[in-house]
Length: 251
Picture (cartoon, rainbow, N blue to C red):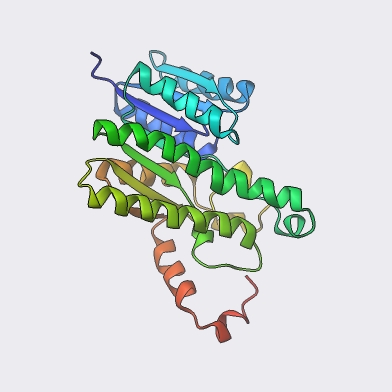
């Protein structure tokens, strides 16, 4: 039986996920499995990781992220091969709020990709972790889920669903005294292709730092982590602002 960690990344082409993969491959002897929807993009990530770690054991698998049966079958197959030690649910997109307001198809797609799909993957993965009473899982949410704001409330609502879902899952695991650990990751705006259209790029967090915070939080079994840390204070203030003040803020 291999002593290597078996690490699954759902959304293996995301920038933050790629930086997490670099850290794990540098820190551990591990088997890395990248799930995605685009084979060319996944292969690009694998090629880069292989240049940095020539002996790395990296697999990729394509799956329809919006097909519940496909997700269930994919995760079942992976678990039949061997247990998953660490799983990171990292996929998502950042839609334009104005487009979601006028295009219900885009609105629906945003909610499916950012909320429903991560929940389906997490449910499928934790089922096997709970059976084995072993594993660590993290889901990337967002500070946008802390309070609905004019600028991104469709995206924010999806991430708020993730917040409530992970909190409920953590409660379930605690009541059953499970050794499975789940972590909610709440990044602030980060310099990735997803945020390329955002203004104020100088204020964006580096994906390297966010990835380091994620890997550390998973290792320590933290329940929730804001990254960079300043966002915990910023969002505490925003969450607790009285509405008569909040409504005057164009954010």
